Length: 501
Image (cartoon, rainbow, N blue to C red; front, side):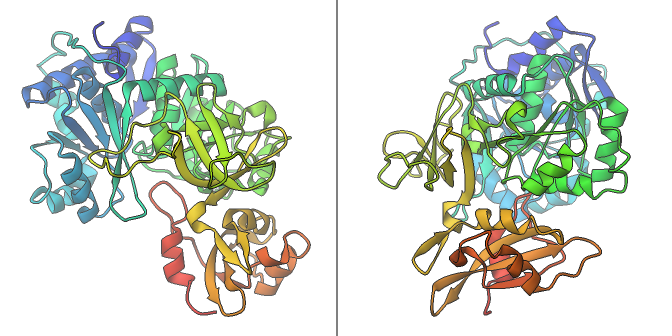
């Protein structure tokens, strides 16, 4: 084939395992052969609309079979796939659409109101409903002749948007090579098998769900069970119903599953791999799953590295619990001081990443370079390394605060607070303080049926943390504000609870 990119994957997989089920979702089942035909038909439909190599094709919708269908169809034409965060407000989406100016936006009917809100202002040439590329939209047309145009691994495959500290969205440019090398890392780290059945319960506009779960499993010939929205009880049912072997989620999702009514009796015997990323995994959560005979394959990464950077393999998950592991096979990671010299063991520094999975930069923002002086990706994340070279993520450098001249990393404090038996979730923010400059405040979500007092939580930390790390105050909340990928929205938390003590 002339097409060496991801757009050729559906055809390549179909010629290997045509009759095997590729996708279960939206009330439908598609074999690899059927999906390949639909990809070809969609590619012809997009070409009729004038989509050419380099054009952007956006998708606004839930985890439906049409999402990967559009991804592969765009890649077939050498176009660039742009998965949109459907949880954004219309003005935020309009800003992204103006930035990438897609030739076509394919939208899910569940977001009809959003489309109406942005259609008059966004820079989009053509709009297609998901129904236009479902069976009724392609009925009578047939898949059409195969399309094979030159696409190299260096060509742009997708743009995934991530929020920037300046507030302006940043489009991370990922080439076909970036995506392929990331898949190779996942295949090696997870030891992916051809009989994998994956549960895709995180939204696939999220780099972890799409690039680190769906695409590696697809490459290997597994079956993807898609959830249009995450429901912890339904997730437990689907694991048993389909014999799910591998899933990805953020800690909040796995925590919610343990609180679901069917947790104690759920049949999880088929599960081989639980991949978790997006935030440090509390050791209490790891222990809860170990009691069910399951271990976390925790990792660290970010959209700019496609996303895999480090991984804690299943065999290491007990004796290195809480670590994000060591570098993926085709990735290199450093932890450095501000002068780019290597930190000593247990000294906090910034994570730098290098490898063929790392982005070339941001779409239309050449002035914003995500690289350190030596060309490595500067992540903005803080971490330590132990004597064995295992990474422990401390959180965002920008979340660090200085109390009495000492650096305090909220993620480290949160990990200890979460060990309190009455604490379900927590986040630590900073407050100004006349004596110490800044002090911490813990925002705590109690476990159902408990009623802890602030003194109980603070007293629990005595002897477990240095005095300067222990928050000065505790407030209780029903829930923590989170962004679309499940991470705690620290800026919102600071607005809500960062007032006077």
